[in-house]
Length: 262
Image (tube, rainbow, N blue to C red; front, side, top):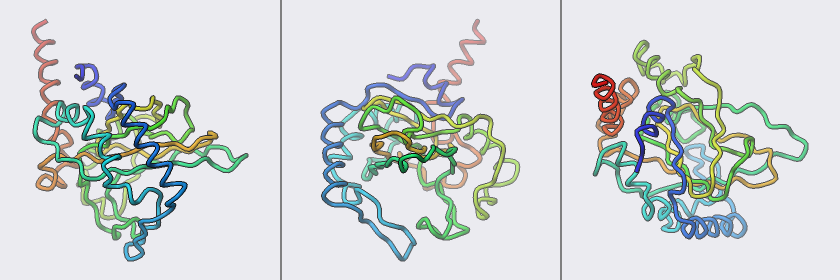
């Protein structure tokens, strides 16, 4: 299902977009559920003990209509091409992320990225704590997003490899002091896609939800895919970023063999 070029892009850039993965019927059902939740349910999911504020669609995190985007589409099959057959943990939670427009007249600021799993004391994790806990982002837009500065899922290409090199040189323990401020190979890319396209991104990608200067609410659902050995590998994944990606390793080996043969 994935081409060698797509696998190579994922290795080099840290992300890849696969068109038309999720059927329209599943997209429409999820979008209806999300819009109903925003309009009729509102904010929820507060966790004051862990300094986590309320958010939209909290009651949909484990709802079948949201999980079906991944479990009843080829998403798992595609992920297994990269992570190995039988290695992807069944998806039990996915988060709708409506991203609302900026106030009228306010220009879109430069996007500011992060890597997941670093405690700040205000994000549900204490300062000094860090743990990646997953293997890949899987992002599905529920409506076409064909322009930039529209709340796009935003990535910094090749940043996954830059962070790996930094952690190899300095140790992943530096994350106890927060995210290190390192030079990144490339600037941000605001990913455009049609509804139903799948965006996969490596867990160590520098990323963010981009600013939304459009007139529309950005509708996306994001799931964190987990390799079955992610807990055992845990922090080793900061310095060996392809440990949970046998499909990527095999593709690179195949390409090397072909090059040598020629």
